[in-house]
Image (cartoon, rainbow, N blue to C red; front, side, top):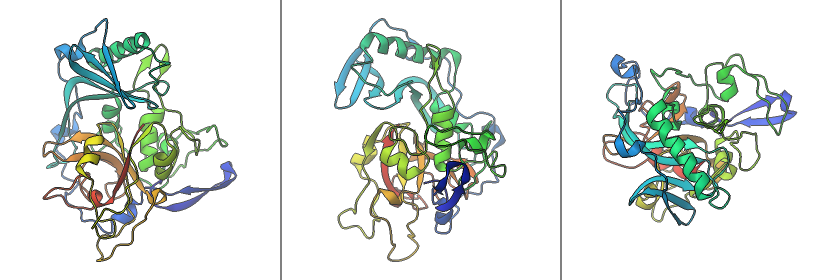
Length: 365
């Protein structure tokens, strides 16, 4: 959903549109603020994820990759080492590249070091229509971009908007990508929508994902910018509300909406080991942030329509916790830090906040 479960009338669209938000404004009343956001390490603010010097095999152009398909995932290998993962129906491609360390922009929050790079295709991957010759050419070009030109991938783009980032964004309930930019948007399934002048420079959780995946180009190949098409409600596109991004968005559902765990109290169940292992860097995670776990018997939704918050999984941090990046009200914008509850969705000792309990699903765009 958008970001506060509020209704906004959109006159240009000709009907009431739900600016439902990520419900994080509700969540803020239930979660403690663990880290003071004002204490920002100036050195960390200078850079969020610069690639290391070229890394040998990560930058090698090869004539032939070895491909193997299991289920919907096709891997590309050099010799016996897997270097890329394509998912049938998904725009995003995960690949290895030079190691990078992304800081949170807030002192005391563990960093994320990863060799994973995420780029998007111009169309959803199909192993039949995107044959091995075309696929190899694209992959060689993508690996070269990672290593040579330094063009930001999805992860680096996302980190630009956090505390201390070059494009630091604020938060507003109902603020979409075009509100942040101050530009009008012409959706395929609606009339032109002007930006809200009070929301320029601000974005909610689902609008943030649209800014990263739908507006920003992370790869130019064959003269085509790699962006995911956006709409209000069209299935297979990057839709507006977080619940719709889960149910009918682009790509493939990785973890279906979680039902009541056996023996758990009122959906008070954290992700299983199998669910955590299925979620890969660059995948989208969804939460039912309307659950009030401050009461003894929380009342929580039982189906996907109660999803109210979404973010992008950026990898295991230096404390081995699963970190995600999302736009939230208490943090006043995109964050991977811990204000208003840790940006972590696995359950582990010392984690404060309820995101592990509120985790509900994951999708690969």
